[in-house]
Length: 439
Image (cartoon, rainbow, N blue to C red; front, side, top):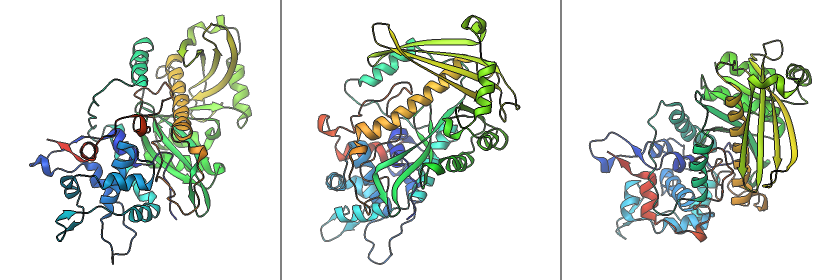
């Protein structure tokens, strides 16, 4: 079975990035979201004979129920769909029963069977391509309506952080690469392991692919990099991806930049970087940046120093850096220390110490969000799903990235994720958010 969806169902990006979308149309009521149009491109693998419900209807209803409302099972998806207004069902092309005089929704069994056999590669291609175009500025950025009610805690923190710790000027668009095994998704060959690219600024999944296991993550990341083709972007990757082959691909073929961590798999480069950056703090005042942070019951100080480098150290290298992270309690006592070395293709005029500190902080935050949303919010590690159930992204996946507006804080469970403690939007409201376009 073909499967390549990431920790987030790709449909999650529909709701996170484009709940509402402006389209030019003579009749606004007849306008269709470009995202729904892309869902129509996903091939239907069912036999034509006996097919009663169009695939796009199933996908749109599942997207609304899962990602707008927070339905976490096939039963929840079907129960929500049964309450969808007739006018919305008509708009997405639901099957009309002339004898009953109403539009019908698929049965729970249909949802389960169709979504389990979904062509996830095609779904990735249709939706992630749209997200990438929006992130790259080649497609109109959608507008997300404000939700009535009190501001969520993480939104308040994001606004406060933007004031207290503003991002340095001149940042280039960036994306983080990371992978994760999905405990709650199975295929015929076993557990699903996915690698994806997540935008630093929005937390949206730009692309994703499935690999047999963690050992194939490097090659999968290079394939994904080539497919994205985002010149001028900065790609942050952890030590697993620090290879000369990956560095040459990013700088030579893609005309982009990298920020890589040097560890045991690159001992010579790491030793060279360590030698270049040796010395006391007083010797590095001009190329050092320190930033203090406080929150989540701890204090943190991230100190970075940089030095010039060239191809002799690593392909395309422009600088090396040493990042020291001190952590402690709220009483101001430092209790932990971690030092890592890294290399970037960006020269000093493109990325000073403050920029590199920001890129690495954003990458670390993306990794935390991935594991927090999957493991804590949606109890991924507690899943006991069996082979033969939907491989990914259904039924209970969350988005790979958090809904929080800030890439600098681990997210708390979203309202959609905890439907039992929040007011559940009506089918009319949820489908409006996903389907309706403005003139």
